[in-house]
Amino acid sequence: MSLEREVDVVVVGAGFSGLYMLHKLRQQNLDVVVFERGDGVGGTWFWNRYPGARCDVESQDYSYSFSPELEQEWEWTERYPAQPEILNYLNHVADRFDLRRSIELETEVTKAAFDDGANQWLVTTDRGESIKAKYVVMATGCLSNGRVPDFDGMDTFGGEIYHTGSWPQEGVDFTGKRVGVIGTGSSGIQAIPEIAKQAEQLTVFQRTPGFSVPARNAPIDPEFLKEVKANYPQRREFARRSATGLPFNGGTETAMEATDEQRKATYESLWGEGGFRIGAAYADLIVNKDSNDTLAAFIHSKIDEAVDDPRTAEKLKPRDYPVSTKRICVDTDYYATYNRPNVSLVDVRQSPIVGFDERGLKTQDAEYEFDVVVFATGFDAMTGALLGPDITGANGLSLREHWHAGPRTYLGLSTVGFPNMFIVAGPGSPSVLTNMVSAIEQHVEWISDHLAHLEDRGLQRSEALSEAEDGWVAQVNGIAESTLFNTANSWYLGANVPGKPRIFMPYAGGFGAYRETCDAVAADGYRGFVLS
Ligand code: NA7
Image 1: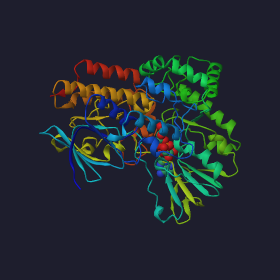
Image 2: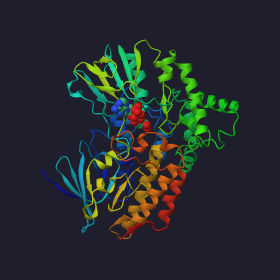
Image 3: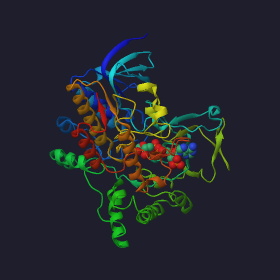
Image 4: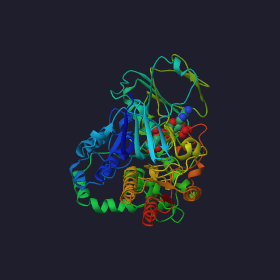
């Protein structure tokens, strides 16, 4: 069945970004439809249901700030919110703001083509629908397209295979099973301790160890929550201006200025506090390798303390990239899990996986039999979901062609040749280097203001200028080059996806500075955009 509909805005995705985008644009009396491929709202938090899945940003800050009433009525229960709690929160938001009537679930956008004459997008879905829209907002998330490596013989494996990023809604029972987990990024590091508690036997295949710090998760202290709620406006305002979208600043002193004793005391104190603040203990940790090495050595010493077997401890120590150049993992009992008799660690750098057969998998040196294999192998991050649909802009240029050497955007919001299309938390914006919810709110609000500006003036079209995009790409690259980020094979650089151009994708100049730039662009009549 082919329906020909027309709306003002198509929003793609119903996670944190899409839900707020819908709410904002509706308030501006725009006719909006949201397409979501899942059979529920929640985006990342809909799909990532693996055991132990939990946000690494604290509950009271990983939440919308746009509604003071919502802030006051929602009761977080733990320091770090677990996946089901975040999903409940987003479902509550969808109901509370009456969003569901504009969201079409189980509907994937497959194509979007800009009609240069009509200044209109034609959006096609996998239901065979076509819909015309003046604007398209890609609210597709940074970590939406899971990656399962293509090992030989995987289709012959007789057991179950799962990816952490598309976990079955009914859950997986590991009781009495022989389980293999491949991957030790944030997802693996959260899932491994939980799977280990159930499985008869767990073998972890590690290619690159992560730097992991304890979450020290606990029930939220009601007094603390009361205080947060009493001071939310100030807390949020601080976060909006901070480098990370969080209500605190990193250290201002450099690690090199501090003495060994002072550094140890600082690191111990932050280790005791838990969470990734330790990564910002000193101002120079992300720019000075010697400074960074002091933190790496401290974390290595903590691995030695936690892990009984010195050879396993040694394998678990990251040695070939600086701390924070891959996202710091925040765990509960990760390292200690290797002291369990039913858990073992295989270094697949030393002995790579060669393939699967019916019973399990083989490395260069050994064979392993499994009932279940869990891929915690990450995502085609930041660009995967944007390049999934076939998007063609003005003059028939495809987004895949425009980005063939890596993503190019102006402010992470817009890309040349794709008028009236906006991206929430796109490459070239701070996104994954910040508290995502703060980053999302800033983008959603900027986009809504921009559309209001166009609508109020009867303008038909907004398009980024080539010079503006070139300048922004150069700025994003320049900032990354002044840091240690480019020295790691991280997903920030696309290095985890074979053949993906190696470009540092997020803007590393700080969220507060970025917001100021976006505000100045708007105040200057949307400098860098052609409005017509
Ligand atoms: P990540 O952080 O990309 O981690 C994926 C892990 O999987 C990482 O350890 C990879 O090793 C490993 N991996 C990937 N491909 C392979 C193959 N072919 N063989 C062996 N091991 C492999 O994804 P997560 O889901 O854990 O976390 C993503 C983000 O979600 C996280 O940063 C938080 O922001 C939340 P590698 O490092 O590539 O050598």
